[in-house]
Length: 215
Image (cartoon, rainbow, N blue to C red; front, side):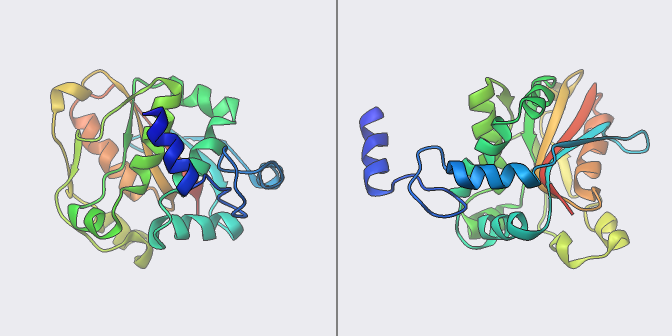
């Protein structure tokens, strides 16, 4: 496996996700120093949502907005390494993640995953789970149908757009668990709130949310 990884690195060397320079950490020191200036790592607490806490790393603007768009829509799946590296470099964020029993990436539809080739939230979640020795479940929550992209809708439409499109595949697994939902962007919170509602119906003990950015 080490030989294979070395060979892949030779032909496809790891690069900084910001400037494109070869860098084994997927973000160079100069770019990381610039990123630190805009990194937020803010935790919001809620008593009127189906989840109790939300941590976001960045505001959805500027270079971060551009990179997330590239990651999701321009076939730059490798950027998950950079996003994970930024998250893992923040002690407060790592401690937040470790408070939960399991990470669950927000699922996308089979149609969208086939078209894109990957679930952007799942790639980041897998990397975090591996580095932090956390459990990750990718088959517990299922998206039953493909809906309109949330980015095209207003607040009320977003809420309606996600109603009853998710189901819990293995209800017994989530009972009494502390679950952390991971998604890329938080705008109104409609998607994660709907998933959290389904989890609460199945007696999940606590639900938190972490996203790369907040709009």
